Length: 261
Image (cartoon, rainbow, N blue to C red; front, top):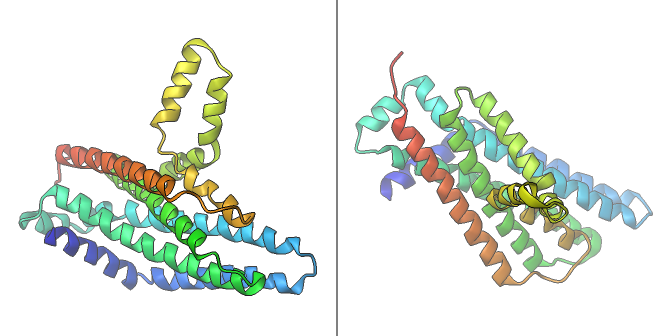
């Protein structure tokens, strides 16, 4: 575990040196200013619209951070050839996979926390209410869903040759799940025979990160708190899905030949 934590620490330090946290801070400040601009309008519905826009931008920003940071980890090691001295030490390929994942996941946790803290502070100043439990549930679900996204990007970084291709395909997959995931179940219910079976199989194979994305409605419309048992179940589900993707990445990495050429 010490090796994994050390590798994760290197990833976090690398993100700090790349100034990603400074970019994150600027993006967060822009989002809070956007929400705060609602005070210049007399329409009370403006706050709700801006909350929806801000939450959507938070999801887009965290997906960009998670995917780009995870997709470049192993390709960067291969390109700089630091992967060879790294694996020459008592470090296995499994250590590399898990360490890179953990580091990117910690970065995602910091990003999610910063976004929700700033967003909650601005909305509380506007609405004079701070549903801490709602924000906590939203952040937990968001972070656990990003575990699947990061694991998918790490798997893609081994399967695809270029990080740009990996990021593009991962964005398409994640975007498809977020926008079409829940509709597949409704579509399958209207089908019959083999098409219904195949659509249902595809639906159950998806990671369903759209559940975390849909939690925005509870924040937007001040709905009652979701049962914590449901939050825990979803978190365990995404953890298991991310673990399966990491195992797939490890198996692909084991079969991959690393050369100096």
